[in-house]
Image (cartoon, rainbow, N blue to C red; front, side, top):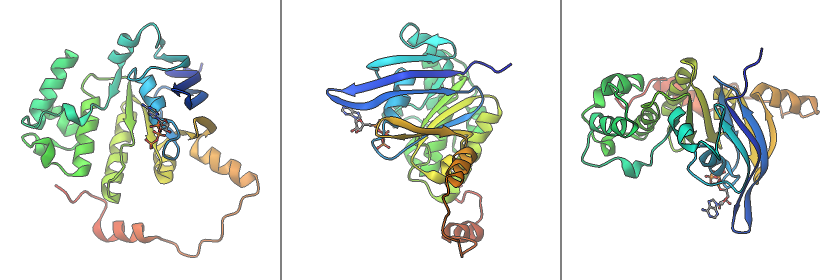
Length: 254
Ligand SMILES: Nc1ncnc2c1ncn2[C@@H]1O[C@H](COP(=O)(O)OP(=O)(O)OP(=O)(O)O)[C@@H](O)[C@H]1O
């Protein structure tokens, strides 16, 4: 028997004044998948994500998270989700271990900071300050903070924006590991390769509407079936392949 969706969004509308940023979208996220909201700047991805995260008010529609109604049980929803905290909350004088202890206290949880840092490959930065981290390390730390309350669902807003190819691949591996441990992941991205290689299913959002929703393969097959043909590719690799081939897949920042 198919499990009920862990997130259910129906006819979601968000208006900022007279501007309709989200125009009545509906979708389900299945338990245990990496679900991507893919769209250009301004499509309404962050707005949608933040409404589900209980961080932003909706105008119309219904949202259910793990069987809880957003209108009735926002505080219960907060307990089962992992949200990236604003970096402004990363007190500059505290090191990573101290920050994790602080956040765990806010969630009323006890976690071993070193175990958590280990899970995002940052154990050797335990005594470092946030500002001393590279871009990829900062993102990994931010993802670690989403895991403190052992959530059922993790929300990631553009997790790899601004990262180099190695750091992106490293983060994709980390996100897959989180999914493989049974946690559902919903993320936003405007990168096509990220959506194709990382996400189990993708909703394409444009101007506040979902214009397609399927697995990456399903979306591609659909396009091909419609008669689309790409110009024959002559090169068997691109510059990114050269870069990764020469510098290795592993992070160089440590
Ligand atoms: N607080 C706000 N007040 C007014 N308009 C807003 C507000 N927040 C977002 N918008 C508008 O709503 C639209 C959707 O914004 P949103 O941030 O959700 O898009 P996005 O798909 O996440 O884009 P990006 O990738 O650029 O973050 C944009 O046109 C944006 O200007």
